[in-house]
Image 1 (cartoon, rainbow, N blue to C red):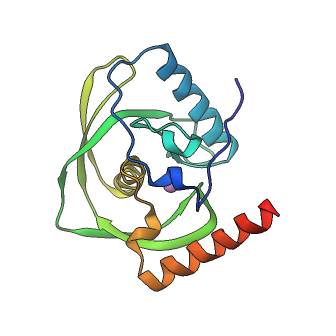
Image 2: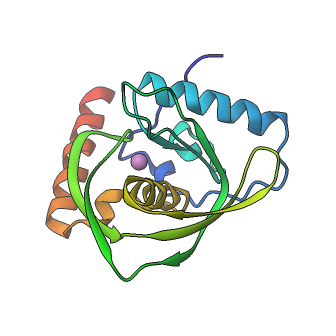
Length: 171
Ligand code: NI
């Protein structure tokens, strides 16, 4: 199995709304394996299936620090069922917007309901980096990017920069 290509801003597929997974079959398990391989190769801490061009509600995460053993986590059909009033600011990046980082304010805590690879339902009360990362990835499933949470000025600047780069690459 090989890592997949990660689609980059301004690829329009990043704006698609991903479809719920109705059956966790072999193709979903293969997709998850390929997503982990792609995420680790990048390297990154989180990936949504649409970032490898698959509009399915599948997210992979690994928030382990470099010196820690790998801690892969899979979230199928993740749904935010509660958000705290309290907010948290964290510097975010995205494998689809390489080398661009900016602080984003989001709810500090969220409750997320999701399925695991066996189709079992779970709920997680996420705080800290897990909260930020899951909100970032659930956004991807809804065609939302972290730059959408920035000022229009900052967002337009980064979109323009990536549009120019894509045009140059196509020449
Ligand atoms: Ni991202």
